[in-house]
Length: 91
Length: 119
Image 1 (cartoon, rainbow over the protein chains, first blue to last red):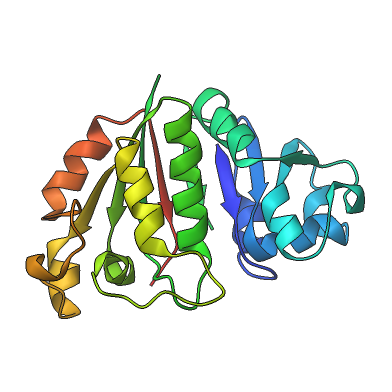
Image 2: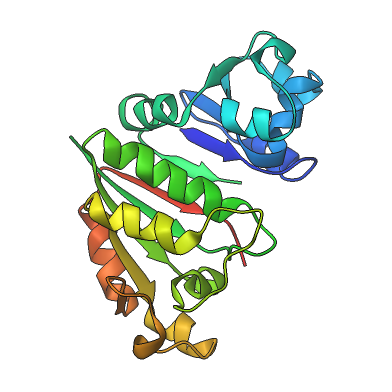
């Protein structure tokens, strides 16, 4: 399951309760702040986290401001959606 | 190549959801995927012609036209649009107005579906 998280400090409980064999979390829009501040949200195990580089840059950050999270472009995002995650949801 | 259907529910004003939806559709179309873009709820306002572009923001009309040139199908929910005073004659050229069954059929034929935003 691929989960788009777009907001800051919203939907975190829903995200925490999601269960699937494989979960990838795509941090877009204001949710990119989770990646920058190393939020507790992204410490949950058995999940792959990705942050959209364009939305980082829009907010004055770069890939250098992010540790241990995959920084992806829209092109990368499309490949992940099409190849790695059959079900997609937006929170 | 696969088919991706994106349903968008947010308007351009007050949300960046439309920005993500359009750029995602563009990136997927550039890779050769078939894309259906569906505007529902407040997103139907995106299809209205004659909108004055923001000075500091991308001109949506040009972005939608570019998507259409890449083969992206753009449909608008007829009931949602009508509820907002937008009728077929008010919609940008090339964007079609349909009832929900059009979109449901597209979803049924899609390899991936993503619904973006909320009212």
